Image (tube, rainbow, N blue to C red; front, side, top):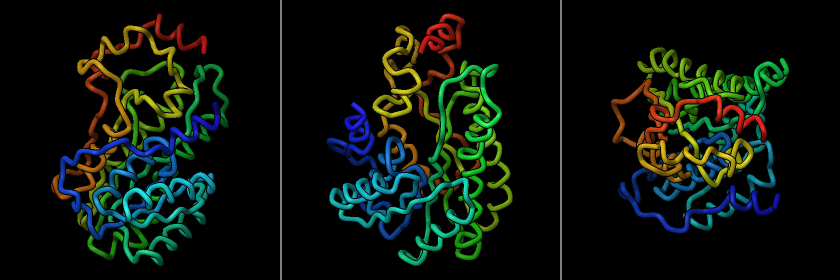
Length: 287
């Protein structure tokens, strides 16, 4: 089952109908943290399907290499895998240098690296909270600053897209650590958009709701999602990795050229209609 889960996290889309022209990102280079699996993998795939080269970084190099090979074979574009822990500034800066040596440019940064688990706040260890903030919030800052200083600042700008979540919109149970870290990222987005905007840098977020066929969905609820969850989603289904990837593509493209400091929520409207109830809390607590 573990091997099957890994394979599903680096599975390419069965088919792809283009909403934008296929050469939309021709000549562009994307640097994607967490790009070796799950949502990050599909974001990378969709960008590469639009003729973008990619650098995917993460902590599991063998998985990154396998993912990069799949994506190159599928799209014909270049994909460079680099082992990086986004919490370690020296590794982040070395990876950005490697990307620039390979491609001479970075146009798009997708901050998708994240850590999460289910835990009541009362039982959450101090180190557990710190670890999630270190990966999600501080990792986002580490990579954003490195790419900005090493390329965006003096080369006409670029595009930063952070993958967040809707957890902090309703105070979701057992997710104090992750929801708070994502809220910090959305706050950071506004500061960076204001400070770096004059240098041509746009900073936005994509905020997914529940996305099926991901490791996060399996570990953080999976089949035990309350039976009425989908019924309460205005668009009457769970999200897909492609939903998130296409939203990211829009923000990565010139179609959003005058959009910055915005969060694009990709959850079918469920953040408005799925209030957290005590019944939900009790159901999740049994996982």
